[in-house]
Length: 253
Length: 303
Image (cartoon, rainbow over all chains, first blue to last red; front, side, top):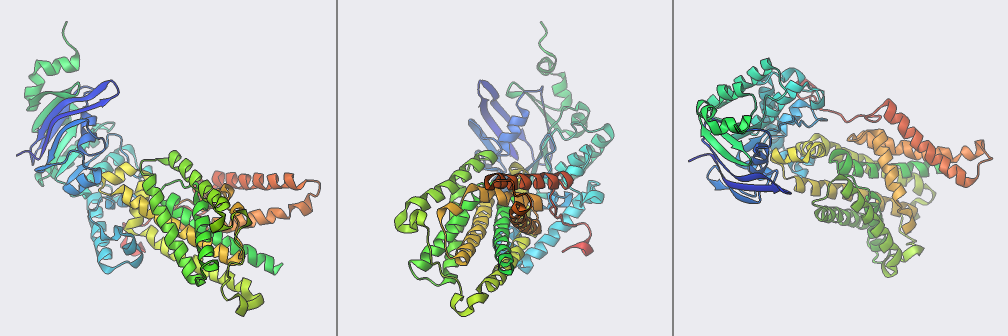
């Protein structure tokens, strides 16, 4: 059974159907690419699946449960993490704080524990800190761990987006254009990180316009256009599909 | 002169407690509460009514003020659920005006515009002329305790979530935090602290009247927190003391420039407060004491 199953999602913004019966599946353990021309509804689909936007209708099943209409924090608890297309770090907080925020079930987040500081929460916080340091080291962010996220370079912000998703220890990560605006060397490094994480058993759904990256990373590619699925298969298959070519290039007269 | 300074220091300590309340709601969580003075008023009235009309002991009156304003804080946040920034600001401003209007008109409860007089002052009879300095010490102790508590909040994982909500509520939600629940808690905690400040004021002045609780007071506290350093609790305290010092010291301007009318002088004071804030923000954009960031990568430097 697929880890994520999206069926017939609809979402309108005024007169525009951003999602017009979109469906897709993401198999556990793989990397699925989600491509399509601008305005195809890819990010809207992410927003609906991650609870940021409500769908008008349709089903979302994640990890065997019907999660349509769940709030973002409930989905996060269920094991779904996402990044944002424009890196949205918590600007006035440090890199390590950004990472530690994603720790699950921190008992110290209760107000009374914040004041009374029971030993358990301090221990939990220390473990969380070690995990954040570990993620920072893996993503080459250790040197800037105590810097404010606002002071990071564009590429570092992208790495931090990925790092935050990892801290949630998720089952599925939705990556929204991880390589957009990133130089080729860093894009390669990001791809390396993502492949590493895949071998560790993490599942990804990736929106990306960099086709080289899609070809390199993805086992399976879903093509969206005009709010619904146009094609699905291996990268080679969808690239050869004339409907896909039309969607990107325009219809041949 | 000494008694004047003691009175001003007492006001400054009470404003500092208010500053800490605002810092929890706005400085840490990013919720613009233009109705801070409403919480201050509710705290003062709850304790005054319970001690004057029902003869409760002062300590119980103050405790009730804290509980009542915490509840008001929690309930208003639920009412403001879907409101963001500017809308929240407008509605909270309205909340404070409603509180003041109710205090003016529900005469059976609040004695209306006559105000409530004879609010008991703790140990007044026993202390006699020593009451004022003793109450100042009491206010400073309360301020110290509140400061220690909110500092713990700020440095805790709880405070981290509040600051994340301030930066980007959507990210905090995606990170798995129930944003609404944290906002309610922040408003309840901040409201309780503002209510405590209100009770402190009532049992000091012994007399409260609705016209004390005007929006300008909220603005002064915003100035104090902004100048002191948004998100920095010590900054909120420092800012409150500076604001009171500034407002009071400009009072003596009349002796220096006698040709100004009292009305012109009042405007000049506000002008100077504004100028002072502009200077602070030009020279130190994050306030006098910027929000401290934890050093987490080096265990030796941890708090």
